[in-house]
Image (tube, rainbow, N blue to C red):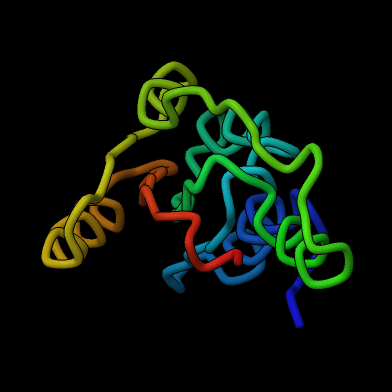
Amino acid sequence: MEFGPLGFSLPAAIGAKLARPHQPVAAFTGDGSFLFSLQELSTAVQEKIQVLVFVFNDSCYGSVARFQRTRYGRTIGTDIVNPDFVALAQGFGAQGFRCHNVLQLPTLVDRAFSYEGPTVVEIPIETDWVG
């Protein structure tokens, strides 16, 4: 079972950080879900809210695709065209990084939690898991 509310992770992370300002806060979201509320990066930048957002990019609404494949044996309307999430984060004034190797994660997490504001880490993933 998936945790399905699209666009929930970033606003929830911002709220969690405001509720517990001294605790590190990270959000984990898919690319499609992130696109539903990415404008909240503006709020996080403006208010200097230190949240780390991991965006798993498979260029697909993965949960919807998995449901369609399971139920109907095919997918329709689940592939999406994404922006460059690193450039998008930087365009809002946040930090943005792309992680191609798990060994990069400790350094990226350290950089995120030493930065006064939000950080987006895009993690490209394969769509083979959807099948």
